[in-house]
Image (cartoon, rainbow, N blue to C red; front, top):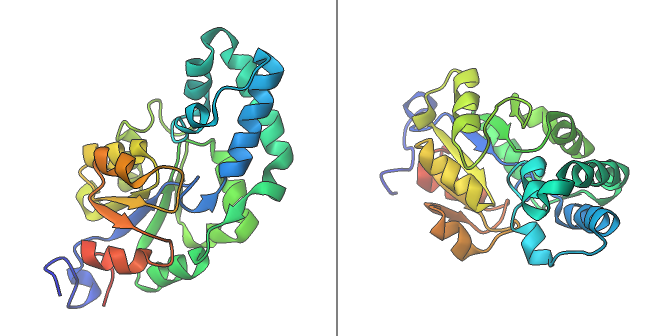
Length: 230
């Protein structure tokens, strides 16, 4: 066993909490997000930007994404996007294979779990409730909770503070380069969710320290970090 794997009782664990991104990490929203982007840009701008351009921004707040696409039309783009997103949300959101079992496993270990997302709180809560995942998380930090957002570490640090746990005893799991950058800045191990929206290389370039191939394999990867009882 490596030095990072716990060999004793839970109170000697190196880490106490696992913080998760939401979109592309806990729930699969790729097709829903892309459909909403296409609807908004086509209706407001009269054309649809390339898919990779739109999806590359997932992980930062929607208002910032739309400002990058068209500053002068940002508000209208946001409104149309949100209207469509709400309409199609429940029918298009998906769960990644193995998510419920992985979260249950981490919970059984006595780990404290939280969501840290750039999504608005109400929609983030709705996404979790579609699959009943909200029962695993004691805290959700969303776009409504901080003035600055990922890749700034402020949301991650706020989550640690509200949990009453030192940031250095938390791990962050996410699928975007913004997640990895925020984790590094917060001095939390950055665990890349390779089942999400970004490539392995993008995540490594952004500072990923550990790579999780699937949600089902996440508990095993976290045991290497020093999180899970083995």
